[in-house]
Image (cartoon, rainbow, N blue to C red; front, top):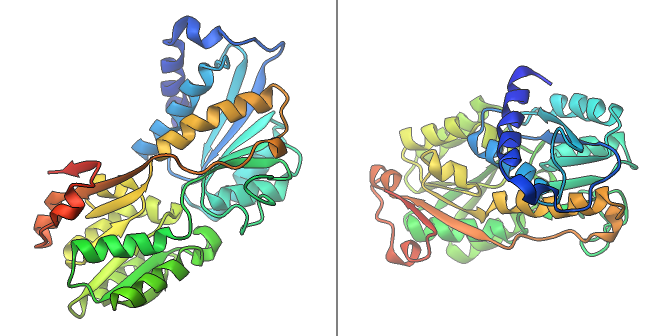
Amino acid sequence: MRRRQVIALVGGIAAVHALGPLAVQAQQPDRTRRIGVLMGYTDTDPEAQVFVRTFVEALAETGWVEGRNLRFDLRWAAADIEKMRDFAQQVVAARPDLILANTTPVIAALQRETRNIPIVFVIASDPVGDGFVASLARPGGNITGFINLEATAGGKWLELLKEAAPRVSRVAVMFNPDTAPGGGNYFTPSFEAAARALAVKPIVSPVRSEAEIEAVITALAREPGGGLVVPSDGFMRVHRHVTIALTARHNVPAVYALRIHALDGGLLSFGPQNVDLFRRAAPYVDRILRGTHPSELPVQVPAKFELVVNLKTAKELGLEIPPTILVRADEVIE
C-alpha cells in the first residue's frame, strides 16, 4: 500500500486496540485471515476515513483484530474507473479470504476478476439490476452486502428541493454514467415522475469531467428557476467541492444524496447514514470468515436516514427554509 493508505488504516486500527478485552471475546481462528478493502472514494475524504475506521472497530468487536488474527489491504480508487480495474486485479491476485467493496463500479470491477472470493459490498443502490446478485433475499453467488438507496429517492430529492426552493421550475439531475447506479438510469424514472407532478421541467445531465459539471450548472443559471439534484455517485462525491462552489457562484439551489455535500456547503442532503452501513457490514464479514457462504446472507437495506440542512448556504442563496423541512431535519448547519 502507499504510505497515505497505510497511515489511514493505522488510524482506525489504533482505535481498535483501545477496545481491550471486548475485541477478543469471540472464538479465535487458528490462522490469520486477509481482507482486501477497495474504496471508491479518495483517501483524503474525511467521512470515508470514518467509514473505514468504523468498520475496523466493529469487526474487532467480533474478535477480528489487525495484527493479531487479521491483515488488511486497503486501496482508494478515487472514482477513477481505470484505477478500480487495476486495483481489483491486484486485490484478487493477492488471494484474500474476503473483499470489502465500496460503490457500484468497484463491485463491477471485482466481479469481473472473481466469482469465488467472497465480496461484501457497502453502498450500492441496485445490485440486482447491475447483476451483482440474483435477488436481495437470495444473492445466489459470492456477493452480498448493503444497499444505500432505492430508486424512489430520485423523486424524494426533487420534492425536497421544490419545498426548499419553490421557485425552481427547471431541475437537472446530474451524474456520471460510468459510476452512477444503472448508468444513471436507476433514479431517473422517479425523478421524472416527481417533475411531472410538481410541474417542473426535468433535465437529465450526464457528466464525466469538471468542465461538464460547470457547463450544466452554468446552463441552469442562464434563466431563472434553475435547480440541481445530485444522486449518490462516487464521481460526484469526489468532485463535490467543484459542484458546490459552482452552485454557490451561480445561485443555483441543489439537493444531494450524501451528508458530506451539506457539510461542505451544499444546501440540502437526504440519504442513509452510510457509516451505519459500514458498521453493519462487520457481522456479515465475521460470519463469512467463520464459514457462512455469502449466498446465505440476504442483501440488507438502510435502517437509518438523515436530512441535513445548511442554513448558511440557504441565506447566501436568498432562501428561507420552511419550518416543514427544519422540523424534520436531523442536522441543521447554522
